[in-house]
Length: 186
Image (cartoon, rainbow, N blue to C red; front, top):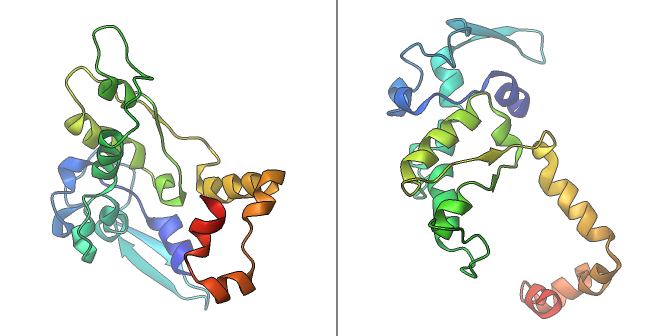
């Protein structure tokens, strides 16, 4: 039931309202304007609990402020920025007068179940705009099937005949350990 609660109640507060866990949904804003002060949530046993708008916004806040749950990383926008900084610098996105870094910000595909929270797209775009180089046009692609993207990608990859030689059996893993991945897959 935690997943159902998260998917039903969770939403992302705008960056201005998310200055910390204590006030992540304290101020009314456009994203929370239609949200009642509290939402009723039905538990499997038939009981109902009331969940405040503040708690609903705090459910997703660790995606942008992982330190709230003891993680040292910089959150979703920082991870995207770090990935762009480490990209393959082959010049594939070089354009007249624009750095390739700026071009990468215009081609961001977002996937994963937690990206389906209401307000996620706006918050990620807002935070990326603060980190992007001057003149970069931040564009996010959020495919409708993004909640299941990892499973879809793995199922497609697993159906490719060339993958058969990379399959690892339980016996192989038990015998060799995690290094078998590097031996068979790279």
